[in-house]
Length: 287
Image (cartoon, rainbow, N blue to C red):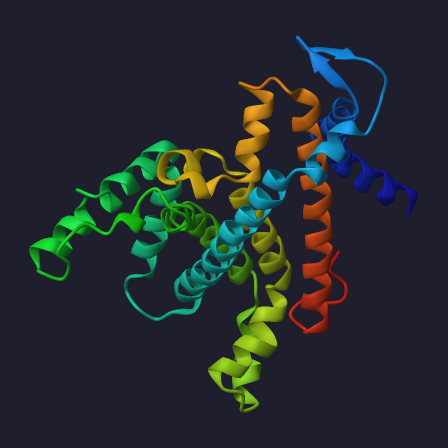
């Protein structure tokens, strides 16, 4: 037994070291940065909570936090729903286009991040493909301005970025479900929908939880997409953090934003996990 545990620890040790080095240590450093004021990359004065107080009291921070939720929540829901549907068809479907669809999902992930964002500017712009096609067909008389430099554009662009990632994660999760379990459910008289809700979804629950959290966090922290296809009403927390660590050089406030975001994300993850367990979509043994 001792040898077995030593072997397990040896296998987990690199992962534990990476977790400490790339997650715990940077979080501690951020927390240290957040309790000081910084001038020319040097701490000034004693440790205080002024940066946190400034964020909480700022109406701009509250407005940006709300904008972040308004953008990140639909992005996460659409990415997870669309990605799960794609993966479900690829794994359990009977059509001849499953391999082609999987190839397209992988190809979408291989494409450049910035190229995909710029492509939406070409598609959704006032003189872009969508407006041009609708005007040529006589559907609209003038370009639809809300399609670009808006929250709608940011949501569409980010869903296109994260849905292929979600689909690939779900593909791996669904491929690991034994076919015998689904066949047994059907033999017992369950419909396809009931099998999905009572067998497939709970068994893939950990992947749903992780992917929902991942896509929400990526959308909330993304500051590049809002810059290129969003407008003044599309500023997210990620943009504020990038500005504080960049042009503003307000490292203390940027670190405080980052720490608060980490705390909120952790609380949301725990809340989502509890909700999924209560509804039976997540096995009790899942961490």
